[in-house]
Length: 289
Image 1 (tube, one colour):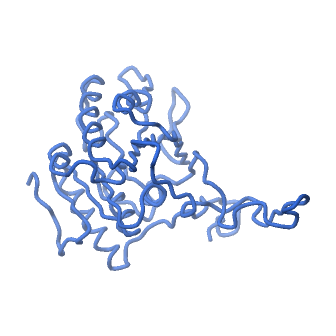
Image 2 (cartoon, helix red, strand yellow; image 1 turned 180 degrees about the vertical axis):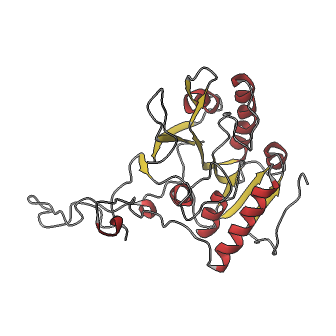
Image 3 (cartoon, helix red, strand yellow; image 1 turned 135 degrees about the vertical axis):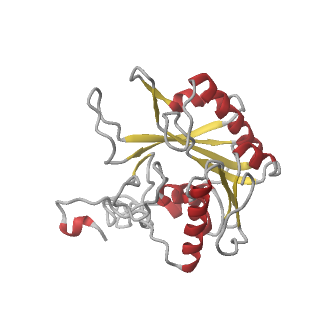
């Protein structure tokens, strides 16, 4: 089935999605044709969809994919590489963002942010502190890059705060659209009770990718995920009027991705709304809007 597209319904005209290894898929795309390459590659920890290899082999594989991602990124575009930790056989924690950073720098990219994605749920460690964050490395190809802050602003802590003296006395001191979300994002990961949960064991939450799509591309732009899984990146792209490209080696995941994209078009896809507060059992209705 290598290279075949799967869909129970006609494919969306702005989606290219295949069962194919990422290098073969990416090789067919034109230079500098993507406004954003966003993905979460395997962490080399033996998940069902990956084969555990030596760290040297893993880095070599990543180097090849990253080189293609750089080739495909437009001059004003971005690359967002979301990774966690590799756990060595002796239990040592290996931060993959530190391991992979030199690969991006070898292509002359500029790191704009190292975004910390914090979540509350995960495995409970017994011989170290439980891991509750991963990172997103956001690189640009040039100093002239797309960055749209307004669509991803979050509510201000004091939205009605005003200047109390000076020429702006009485005027709102903050942006009425909200504040910069900072480089620490508190977004629930996709576990059993998450509305977006599928069979994939390490699924992107759509709202995480939505922030990147809205901030780093313009409407009508093109977004690529070379490790697309069940298509959360494509859902985020299509939801906001972008063209979506992705591939994965697992036919089941690609089929689920198509199902989610068709549900999005039909208005039936269950998603956690972007910027919804994290559930807090101490607040009325858990603090949910």
